[in-house]
Length: 193
Image 1 (cartoon, helix red, strand yellow):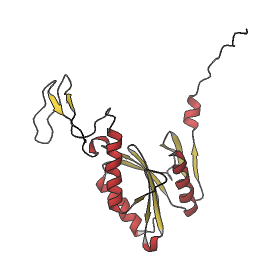
Image 2 (image 1 turned 120 degrees about the horizontal axis):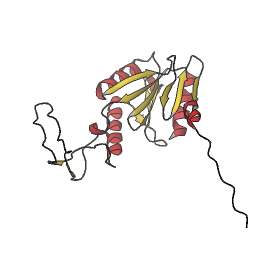
Image 3 (image 1 turned 180 degrees about the vertical axis):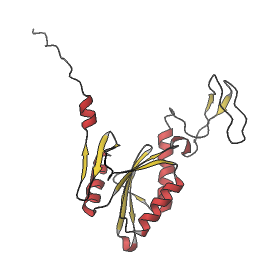
Image 4 (image 1 turned 30 degrees about the vertical axis):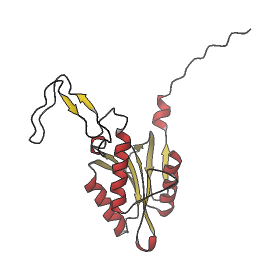
């Protein structure tokens, strides 16, 4: 939830943990397998050959094994796989806020917080913690991360339609880009009766 994202940002700011936003490149097709049988047709131009596989002919009938863009199951299958991977790394999902995870180090000391939204993630952590450093490396290895973007950069970073920036004392979140795009709408006066 949006509230959970702000709560972990407040906790991270209190700990002075740096934050990073990450994009998973192949989130949807790397989700868990479908639990039902589903078939579709290849596009009119077919599909190119991949990894030693032959090219797929136009309109060929295909069994869909995993999530694909546009399939209603796809985001949930991706979340379930991401959750499985994060749990294997040592993260624990909060029961009060799904897709929000905590990581504890030595003596159960909190060392990282992570939230997922579809194929985007926000990670805050203690750079002095070996547990956090190892977990971040595992995230990078186990997910196909397109790029990591530091909130401490010179420019705002987008996450959940908001712009984020961090310095040593605070995390600033605003929606100026969205607000600047708003347009005035004229509302005609109501008819009097």
